[in-house]
Every structure is written in C-alpha cells, then in structure tokens.
Image (cartoon, rainbow, N blue to C red; front, side):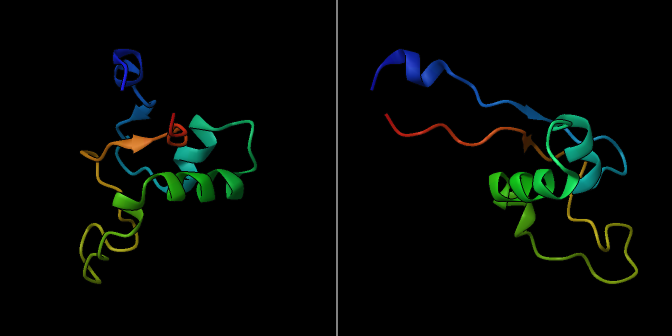
Length: 80
C-alpha cells in the first residue's frame, strides 16, 4: 500500500447540538433531497446508525447522534 492512499482523509464533521440525520443532510449535502442525504449518511455511518437506541424518556431518546460522534459526510473510498 502506498503512503498516498494512507494520507487521504475522509471528510467528516462533529454534529452540532440537537442535530439529526435530516439536519446534517440538509446542511452538509444540500445538492441531495433530504431523504436521499439521510439514507447516504446512515449507510456511511453505521457506527452511529446501528447504535442501540437510548431508553425512552432519556435525553437521547429517538436520536442516536451524539455531539462527540464523528459523522462521515462522504462515502468510503474504493479499494485500490
């Protein structure tokens, strides 16, 4: 593997307080319809999307995204 491949970093963000998949999609992927952006984000961020849901009544209920998460805003690179 070459050093060039290892030095390429995938674009990512840290969510803002109260962000949801839709708000991130609208802000970071404005060229896509919101629903398409949400679908893309969820497929690129399975580490967040597949997280166990928070208990009902907790501050995180209904939204798995935490301000400390790293959210990728572009797909993984193809294997060389």
